[in-house]
Length: 284
Image (cartoon, rainbow, N blue to C red; front, side, top):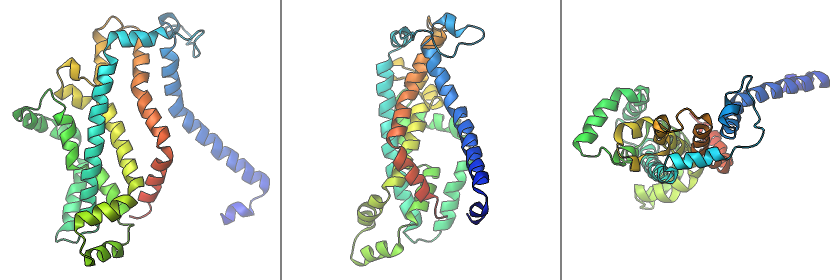
């Protein structure tokens, strides 16, 4: 701050312009693929294959979206994805918050050791435990149901546990200690004191889990065989065997419809999402 104050006004303005230019370029790197997807979904096959590429369609070809609806049962897939995502969000938020509270405001022997063990499981990629999980769920008779995609979320996620613990550590211990002296149980303290203060952090957990569950392709691919249970991401398989397997327009239209709910949810929760990230990262 002191160095910026000592710089001439022209140099400082040039520095700000340079930073804004860099940020704009980085932003374009994320926005251009989305714009290209929308453009492809609104062009005919001839326009999509034209060389050099035509970025802006001459006249929007809305028929690609109708073709996507005719090719796969979009509303059935949407309902399945929404159910799996909603249950997963509730399960992850409740279980991860309870575990994080136990690691932050309840003193018990071996707490730090167990916390390190839980966090260390983040190093294991999903592919390592994928086969053993499938055998376990197959023995339980859960294959071709939503249970393998939703029940594990009720046992917490290490990353969310870590993030919520960092946030709970910001809550003064004196508050929970005073409630204990007044005779409140741990669940009462958790529900009445900790949870209302943790809404920003829980919003971040909910949004991240919603995006992860909504975009999950591998889990539904492994456990779901009935097309009536397919989610939106797994429904993309239909285009590979449909009449539109070589048509870029309908595929792009379907892909954009998958991404649209996530984009809408993010913009609706953007302010609380950024607030939760900022508050969670202030204390290590």
